Length: 411
Image 1 (cartoon, rainbow, N blue to C red):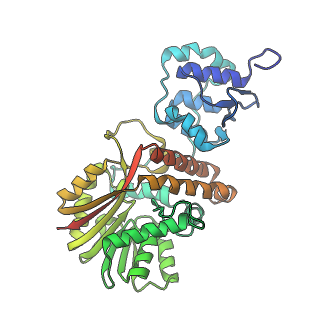
Image 2: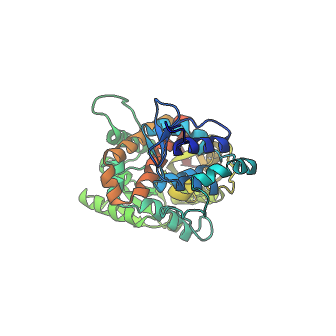
Image 3: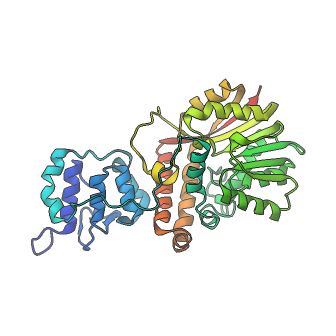
C-alpha cells in the first residue's frame, strides 16, 4: 500500500498473481510505475510492462513467462539463479489457472488494464515446418540455434568454441578455467577412442571444429567432420586452415544421413544425439555402426533425461526458443539402441556434475560482455541465451538432467 491508501500497481499485481496461483509469490515485485511489494532481501521480479500479465493470461506457465522475459516485459533485479530457484514451480509446471480464479480476478484485471488480445510473440520464437526430423526440418532447427553468429558464440563459449559439457579436472586451481576444462574434455574423448597416427576419425556434429583440430594436431589422425550448420562449417574450415591442418581435416556441410566414407577407425558424436529424435535413434545407431570398421570405437556424449519421458503437446521454452525438436531420453534407452545396432558398449561415464560449472561459465561470459552480445544479435536473443543457460545450469545441479559419455565398439 502507498501512503495515500490507494492500492499500488505492485500490490494489485501481486494480489492478482497470488490469487491465480493459489500460492504466495516468492519474490519481491516491482511494477511498471516503480511501486514495489513483497519480501525484502532477495532478487526482485521487475514487471516493466503490464503486457506481461496479459501474456500469462493467454499462455499460462513456462511459455508465457518466457515470452514475457524474452520481450523485456519482465526481468530480474538481482541474482538470476536465485530468482529462477524461487520461481521454479512456475517455470517447470503450468500455472494452475482456472475459470473461477479468473472470474474472481476480473476487477483487478480491468483496473490494471490487462484485458485485451494476446500480445504478439517475440520475434525470437520459432516454429519449424515439415515432417519431424526430416532433413529439411532439421536444417531449420539447427540453423535457428547454431547460425546466431560465430562472433556471438565466441563471446559465450570462449576461444575453444566447444559447445558441450567440459571436464573440470582441477576445480578451483589458480588459472584453471573453462578453456582448459574444454581441452581436458577433448583429450579424454581422444584417449577413450585410443586414436593413433594414421587412423581416420569421423566427427559427427563437428561444431566449430574444436575436436577435429585437437585430434589431428595431438594424435596424428585424419578427420572428416560433418555439420548441417553452414556458419559452423565455414568457421571450422577457416580454423583448420589457420592451424595448418587442411591436409588432415575435412569439414563438410552435410547431414549425417548423407555421409559416404570408407569405414573409419573411430567416430565421435558429441552433443549430436539430442537432435536426432527418439523415433529415429535406432536408425542413427545403425548408421554409425555401418560407418565404422570392425573393432572401431564410438564415443557418444549426450544429455539425458533422468526420468521417464513422454512427449506431450505442451510447448516448452526450450522447444520454442532454443532447441526446436530437441529430444532427450534416459541413458539406458540410448545404450540399448547402440546394442541393438550391433555395438558392444564398453563403458558409460556420467558427467552431470561438470555441466553446471560449464553453463555458469558461459553465463558469466555473456553477462560480462552483455552490450556486445546484444549488438551481435538482439536484446531478445541475448535474453533467450541468458535464461536458457542459467535455467539449465540449475537443472543439472538439481539432477533434472544428466550427461554421459558412452564408449562402444563395433563387434
